[in-house]
Image 1 (cartoon, rainbow, N blue to C red):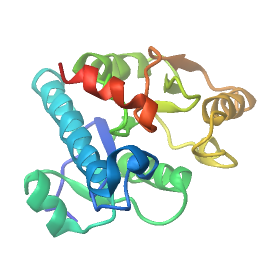
Image 2 (tube, rainbow, N blue to C red):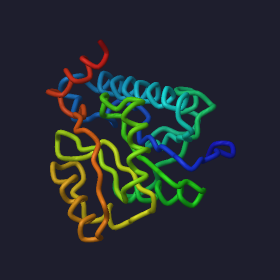
Image 3 (cartoon, rainbow, N blue to C red):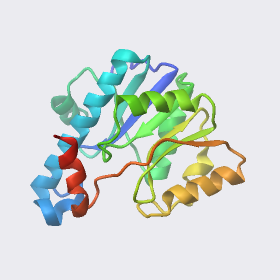
Image 4 (cartoon, one colour):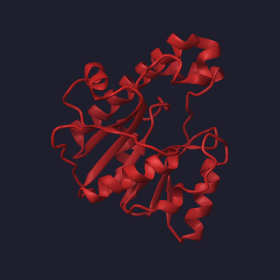
Length: 210
């Protein structure tokens, strides 16, 4: 989808959506309205990208933007033509993440990390720490306060980690760790951070902008 994107051994994948009103940050629409929720999606994506670009100045990584909704032209006009864009594709969140890992490993990556744009606490330092810690474990997770995870890192594509998960619930992290234990995978954790998904979370975003 982009011109010959080069993937390095350390590869970061950012999951986001094109900020189309009514289709994104829907749980925040009661507080912000459809335009306000879409605008927050836009701002949080740009904020996350700024952290990733800072990381790229000090660490040898490649990264891509995996998007849903919109199209390549809309993404490029929003975030620029120089980024590597890929469609998230079909299926639930687990299938889309699994396929993203597979694509990256098939293109030569050795350590792959996926993040969303919902967690303003993710900065260059945490991302750098993620790639370092991934050296010594099979599965790296950044736990979210709501029971999910804001970051997942692997050195091999392990599809079982993304099946039979109740996505969008407070059971996601526990279910993922339970599967990892059944597979005898070593698990390492980053610090716990808060996502911005609901109206009561908006203060987290506002505090990150100060």
